[in-house]
Each structure stands twice: as C-alpha cells, then as structure tokens.
Image (cartoon, rainbow, N blue to C red; front, top):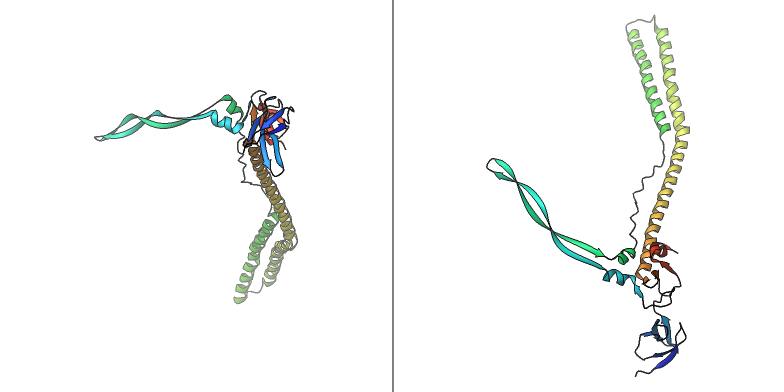
Length: 275
C-alpha cells in the first residue's frame, strides 16, 4: 500500500509529498534532494549530500565516483630494440631485432588529478640513534694493567739473575740486585694499583652514566616511533574522510555530507587533515 505523506522541506519549507516506497525525494521548490529514513518513530528527512555553500546537491558528486569515471586505463604494445650476440663460425656477430613489450597507461582528467587522495606516508623506522656511551675508563684500566704487567718482568728478570749468582757463589752484588728488585717492584705496583683503583671507583660511575645515556637514546627512539605511527594514523583518518568526500561543481568546493564545513578544491589536503 503506497500511502502518500505530506511534509515540509527542511530547506525551504515547501510542501513535499512522500510515497510509501520512496527512498530519495527531490524538493520541487528548491531542488534539494532529501534522504527518507523510516523507523519506529516515523518518517524523517535528511539533506542528501547538499553543498554547504549553495545548499543544493544537483551539482554535487561523490569524489570516488568522479575518480572512477574520469580515470581510464589503456593497454597497448610498444617495440624495443634488442641486440644479442650470435655465434657465426668462430666469431660472434651482433643481431638486432624488435621485441614487443606490453604497456599500460592511465589517463586522468584535470579534475580527477586535483581530487587525488594524499599519498600514503612511508616513515623511516630504522632509527639509528647513538647512545653516546663511552668506555674510556675501562680502556685506561686495561692500559695501566698492561704497563704494570710489563714492568713486573723487570724484577722477575733480576730475581732470576740473583738466583744464578747465588748458585755460582757470587754474593758481592747481592745488595744492589735486591735493591733493584725492590725498586722495579715498586714501579710496577704503581700502575697496577692505579688501575685497580680506577676499576673500583671510576668504572662503576662510568657504567651508570652509560646506562643513563642508553635510556635517553631508547626514549628518543620510542618518541620517533610514536611520531611515525601518528603520521600513518593521520593519513588513515584523512583517507576515511576522502572516501566520504563530495565535490560541488557549481562552487568548485569539497565537503563532507552532514557537515557545515567546506573548502576550495585547492585546499583538499588541508581539509582532509584538519581535526
């Protein structure tokens, strides 16, 4: 049963007659189309993708539909020159031939080019951030221990010489040799002692500083990672808006249905990325 219902146009106030099976109704007075919604509460009218600037939708078209209708892919064949070496007797001779290569081209209108969606960002996620750690103290300890180890060879050599003299009964130079052993031992113990002191005092402090620098570098990498993720998320939200976007030919502007905002077509990217 197709009962007729009379309502007022939300745009101009003119009388509208709604049929029982109608889904979209165009006002005869102002030309604005309305989407008919039926639910338990009754029938309501919604403006159907009307331009916020001219308040009409007779020149409004969905951007995705424009891209499909004004973008054409054509396939063809092009010929390329290819040179190969062919064996003739004991030598090789160049042979040239034409090779068919399939091609595909895309033809897009100027309007479709202006309505092209923003390119997907490809942030660099290979973050190479130096943590600034240093091992100077540990290197100093190693150097001092090596020097002390070499210096220890001198008293060891003197001890060996002293033992040989005692075995041969030569004790006239025993005092001077013992004094030499003592002096070289003290000289060798000085860098060893300094190295052990650095190891117990300076190295733990340096290790703590390096850990703090690593923590700062890790926080910086995480910050860059979050920025890269946010860039991709903003693009995804912009693409969701682009898929719902309409273009009004009369006012050369873009808008989102149900929104009072619009923008010139030249500000497409800014309009999509706005909060």
